[in-house]
Image 1 (cartoon, rainbow, N blue to C red):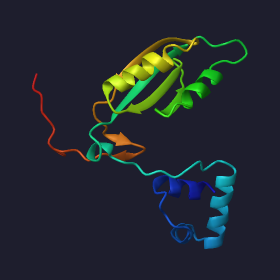
Image 2: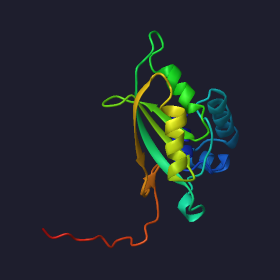
Image 3: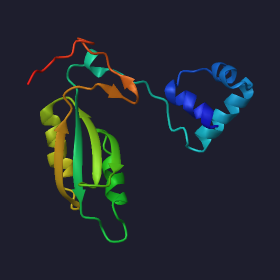
Image 4: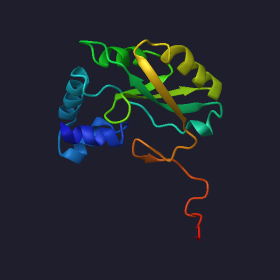
Length: 159
């Protein structure tokens, strides 16, 4: 099963016949393994990695650090699940270190993202502080490097 997952993780477009050939299995065996992985919620979905800057110039990504005062008996989970329900939110992670939750969101403008934080995140009674970081440029996502304009031409700084 692990080998099937590893292949799909690298390229979710692989056909069952291709995976079967790579792993010396039958197509039926691969299809059954994939069905089981989906049924057991190990495979949660299939998504392409899109360079949105080539499609939509009006798209902002932000990474938000959130400090939370956990509620007795509920820890951070209740507020993390609540935040994850917003359409703007792409990812929510419980973190160790200097803050509690790490949230990635998307919006059309800086103002839209700022209003999301001000109107939806900051007012939550458990949220004690936020720090928003706007993504200026993506270089790599999910193991895939984004095309760079001047690839190979690094600036040399002499001190």
